[in-house]
Image 1 (tube, protein in one colour):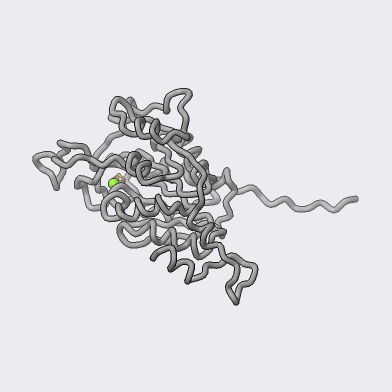
Image 2 (cartoon, rainbow, N blue to C red):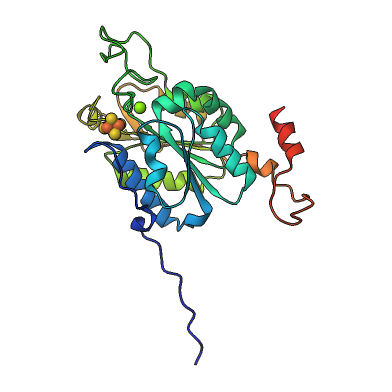
Amino acid sequence: MPKKTAEKPKLLPKDYKSHVKPTWCPGCGDYGVLASLYGAMAQLELDPARTVVVSGIGCSSRLPFFVKTYGFQTAHGRVLPVAMGVKIANPDLTVIAVGGDGDGFSIGGNHLAHAVRRNPDITYVVMDNEIYGLTKGQTSPTSPVGMKTKSTPYGSSDAPINPMAWVLASGVSFAARGFSGNPKQVTDLIMQGIQHPGFAFVQTMSPCPTFYNTFDLWRPRVEDLPEGYDPSDRTQAMAQAFRNDAIPLGVFYREVRPTLDSHTRVTNHPFKQGAYDFDVHSLLEIYR
Ligand code: SF4
Ligand code: MG
């Protein structure tokens, strides 16, 4: 009788939960994004030992603590340089960067444009709540004009940045938007982002019920991108990014082009013949 080979047990979303319970406020939109990330990891059967989740600082940047993979909470706004470094050092790892709108679009803003154009094969999930939650409710780079907060008692006069238009203009190779009130779609978008060979930007509209509860404001405004929409057309994607009659959801843009880590996959390191490794000289050339 042929010997039965033991099948590897399939990982479930709960298998990616760490022993640390999420410390977000009740009802925080980030719970939905975390559940979606667990789901995406399970569906893709990611090996927790070969997956790294990197974050910056902020409420949403606590996320790596709650995931049973390798994790790294960096300094404020520095999620992308560290995530890129992890990917360059070991291109075989799945690298997922996470954070909020303050972390990613304010202090980390310059890193965003340059990570996007370098196109490392990492996925960046931003939980955008249009407010600084961790520091108790100040305006963020995506807060609307007129918004009254502790930092803007007479209403904000600053125009909000448009993250989707920003990454499209910087040459992003994959850009999508979801709403944490629809975690099934967010799961699908994160999965597509991880499978995309290149920098995948996944903006999730993720309300902060404690300091700026936008669930009721956003729910009637979110809708899927129009039928027949072509995600290979950057101009069309830009037009969708600037819509103000609705908050379109789905994959805005997708193209396949060379990635940063493919440039650094050199195999001539004297100690690691045949293995993927990076050569510090080629790395310096890229950053020169
Ligand atoms: Fe979530 Fe806002 Fe609470 Fe932070 S302050 S955990 S963003 S609800
Ligand atoms: Mg925020």
